[in-house]
Amino acid sequence: MLRYLLRRMVAMPLLLLGIASVVFLLSQVTKGDPLSALIPERMMSNEQVVATVKAQWGLDRSLPERYLIYMGRLVQGDLGTSFSTRRPVSTDIAGRLPATLELVIAAMIFGCTSGIGLGIIAARFKNTFADSAARIFALIGSSLPVFWSGLILLFIFSVKLGWVSGPGRLDARTEPPPGITGLFTVDSLLAGNMPLFLEALGHLILPAFVLGWSVTGIVTRLIRSSLLEALNMDYIRTARAKGAPESVVILHHALRNALIPSLTILGFTFAYLITGAVLTETIFSWPGIGSYAVSAARSLDYPAIVGVTLVGAMAFLLANLVTDVTYAFANPRVKLEG
Image 1 (cartoon, rainbow, N blue to C red):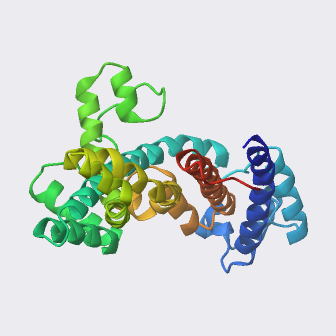
Image 2 (spheres, rainbow, N blue to C red):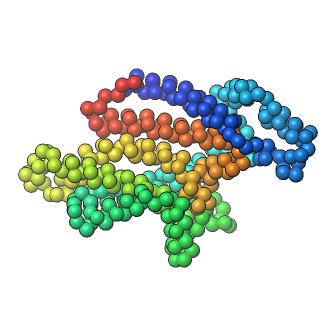
Image 3 (tube, rainbow, N blue to C red):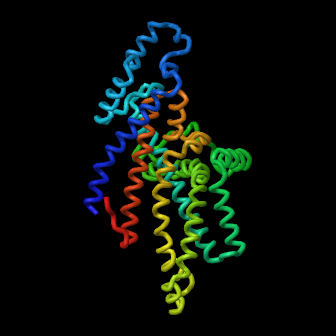
């Protein structure tokens, strides 16, 4: 296990450098002029201003030179400076990452708990109305486009009914809690400010539901199929023959084995949500990594684009590593090799 972890940790920086190289080269050959993010439109005709800005940002250098300079800085942990915000990309990402993590964690909690519950109901009451209802709910969640479900649910539950708060992490005039973790719900609890916690939670519920609905669909189908397979095993028949209650048979015996195949999907789903929350964050004005990526793409902010891509790549690599190790602990028959 230790040797496997060391090999993966050594390979991870090399993979990130390779990903950074590909993304950097693709961003440079994409049609578009990054000067539009650096120079006002009325100054684009001023050749002196254009030449000065190009020299300042290194855009007057050749592509190989820009690549070597960028990779040299990247090795030192410098992601560059954003064309749009004029701040270090690492600072921008560090300021927005907690918002995305809060949203993703809430979406995973909702998606996993509801998915496991619906999967158990669907398997326990196979081919009944409860089974059909759980499967339909899961199918809708995994099929509906996020931009459509987000807009519709926001209009219904926030605009029309007023049951949940509108876009944003807090109301417009509310001061955020003291920055401890960056998660507003956690920080407000640590500060002992219950009204602020309820306000932050109210803003979090709907986007977390929209983002986690797709997770519900995936988990429900996985748990249902795994449980149905486990319930036909010999050890389940033995447990029933000994007089164990059906709830104990399902929750204690069958579910433990049914959860193992879901670990791999859940790990990658968490990483996917970090980078795939773009539409959800845009619809709900959530100031996270997704909305930052959208603004970077609109303005051809190459350093920000590469920085966000590296964050996503790191999330997938770490999720892959954690998933493999967790799966090995959950299933002793699996041996890690690498």
